[in-house]
Length: 98
Image (cartoon, rainbow, N blue to C red; front, side):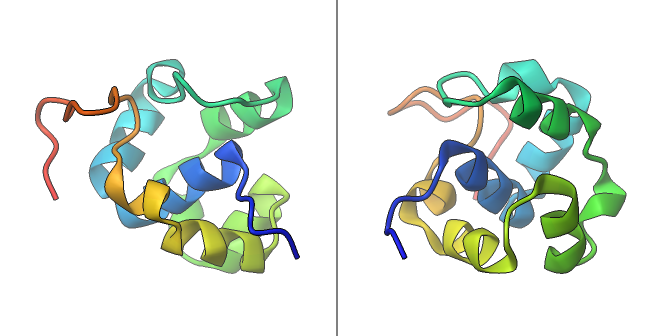
């Protein structure tokens, strides 16, 4: 298995942990995926996610097409843990904190 985690998986991993970014993604998805390499299908998937889709990793895997293992790897990835969506490297998006 490759150590590389896709940008799409990183977003999913981060929004699994960070409810602030999850809420911001649901409210304005296109502002939150700036700087990530995503396909049109991945953008559509992110646009269609709701809070209810985060009850289990199994449900999230079904909706995203990622495996539970890919989601777990993304949740634990340093980039998913340390950087809010929509932020620019070195900047914290206002209103978000850890």
